Length: 269
Image (cartoon, rainbow, N blue to C red; front, side):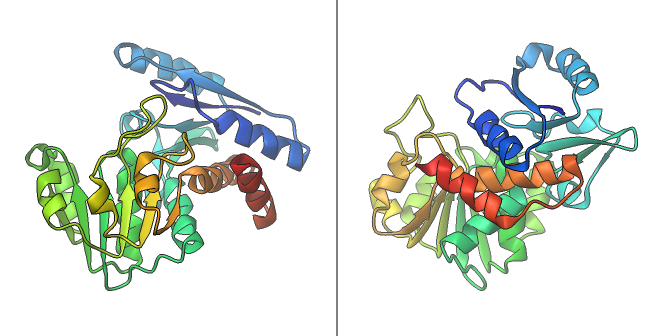
């Protein structure tokens, strides 16, 4: 199978390693490439890439941009409004969102129970929609989404947010009311190579007992370092689980949980 990841900057992506480990464990032939697409050539390169590939993953900043190029999208991708996996099914290009399942399993991993409680999500990009939907489905009483410019949030996202008990806030307001059962960083702040920075203050981070940073490189971001007291997880486990879910779609078969656990452990060594 010819598979790959499309995004704008992919130099430090670990996705090829994860998928190659999976190919080895399943004893199947496969190739997984990194395909960087500059914004000014997105449409033309994407069309060629879709034609040449059996399946694709999608990352920043194209999880919304790919949708008009697809024939259909799955129910969870339609609800979330973002796609991170593309498969060719019966000759049609179909978009899926496996970030949802990766995040849901990460909540379980740190025993983060949000039912009836407040959860805070930093950022409102493509990945945050899956996180917001999952938190809503898990019964969060209030979801606070923190944005540098909440007044500039587009109408589509605002409608999505309003339907899911989301309160949009700026960072200044958040710092004054830093509290909740769970904090999730869905921004790229702190990602390699710009390490050593956090989207929030150390004091604010200390108000949360459960913290997830979906960044996986570095393994410990400044935010996770500041939340030293908390039950926490980086993005590695989520990355592995969403990759496994994508492979299940492409291969049209279930992959044993033990394989996902093995790969996540190997990637964290």
